[in-house]
Image (cartoon, rainbow, N blue to C red; front, side, top):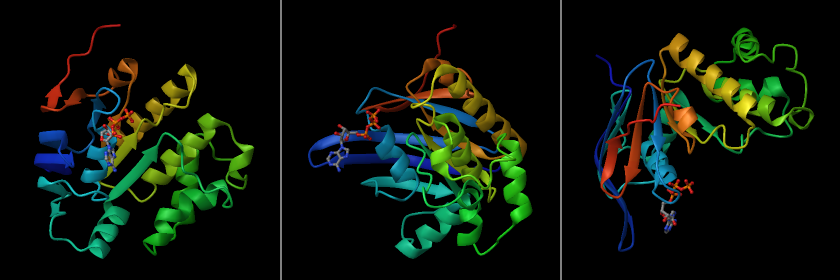
Length: 223
Ligand SMILES: Nc1ncnc2c1ncn2[C@@H]1O[C@H](COP(=O)(O)OP(=O)(O)OP(=O)(O)O)[C@@H](O)[C@H]1O
């Protein structure tokens, strides 16, 4: 079966201080996996290593079958553009572009403009009539939906989401998670979701916890 993200024995230290070691991970199409861990345990560092934005000290990462190691930066950037979608806590929606232009961006960078796909994504996230608005005219929950539409518009193999509901109230957090999950299922994308919330993690297919020993399956408490 296809593996969209494969990490083997990844280790990373800052100077003498290990952040994580022995991290093994496989994500398959349509799978949402939650990544939990104490603050400072290295979740963001791991995400950056998986995306090839940071370099692990040892181990290997493959995205959709392509190994990152040995790939020059231009090749990594191309791989990220084609295969990855990012969603961050702080949205990173560009303020001087309209909602629709923000969502269209990944397609433009791939030289595959597709206004119908942009509109379909806006519809899918419930912003079908707001494409012409500027980001400052949207709420936090709406901005995060723009970020999700943008992360998915080019049908990436893999989504890396770093606390995408961290800035949202409970209702909007639930809506954003519903949306992410629906899109992951519909498109067969794999998604790694960093979260501090056990409630959010409980929505995932499985949860993993990061500590200095590596990644371990995490048993969620029933709520
Ligand atoms: N550039 C850097 N140089 C040195 N240490 C760093 C650097 N970046 C991160 N660290 C340290 O590495 C550890 C992991 O940081 P990271 O941001 O990955 O944790 P995190 O699990 O994402 O935390 P949080 O949940 O608070 O966002 C922390 O102890 C942090 O201080």
